[in-house]
Length: 320
Ligand SMILES: [Zn+2]
Image 1 (spheres, rainbow, N blue to C red):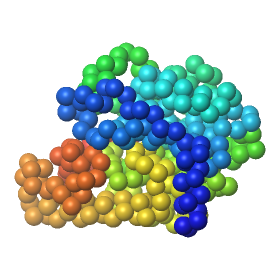
Image 2 (tube, rainbow, N blue to C red):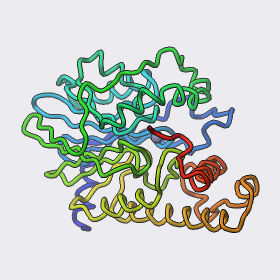
Image 3 (tube, protein in one colour):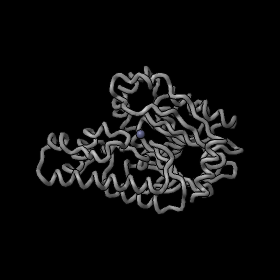
């Protein structure tokens, strides 16, 4: 494992690159983003497989083959997708053949139109496709502050739906490389898609996993199932876990997230069982032992959402 980690670091040093953080992140005056200003990092995690980590926003990845490129998630706005395309073009001039959208949150698919223009074929789980249609208005509403802060025009965002959907598994081959799309049920979201690269021993999990980052629980039908999925992920025969947010992960980070969600679930159930009101719970249940975890500043929203699920049996942002 140590030898492997050293190998990975060497790969990152020789083949990865760092991009300066965009100028706007110096001046986040409106409070919509309270994250550290960490430069965007692109790392080649396996030969031809690149991971883009953007701490303040969302991650993406791409696989370069002789026959073209597979892209995983397209970021939060077409302008961000243009940046992603420029990063891909630093690694290959091959055509973009496939795009997989791992889940239907706008910060992971609002850049789709840029890759549509490039001629890509889009793939997603059936429920992700459904949520892109039913939740588009909600996703746009949730991101107005972000668009304002970045001076991105919301009108540039359009829905690009998948050309191909799948229900349980789908294996893609491109240029002699193989990637397996796997659905293990609704974790963070109905439709959460895993991409497993068996030869490279890498797993990309856009929704359920985000290293050292609080995930939004307003879409999950069950945190118990979500934790179960994380434990199944941790048991998989892979070495590298890539999430929709946060840096490159290892097995221990997947297990840390499972533990954090279990603690969140237990703490919330205890507060509801005590008969505290929604307002009292939002004010007093803070999970401060996890305050250094990315996105903790949004805890009042997370507590509010999960209170909704625990007391009504339905996710706040339910699908269907
Ligand atoms: Zn996200």
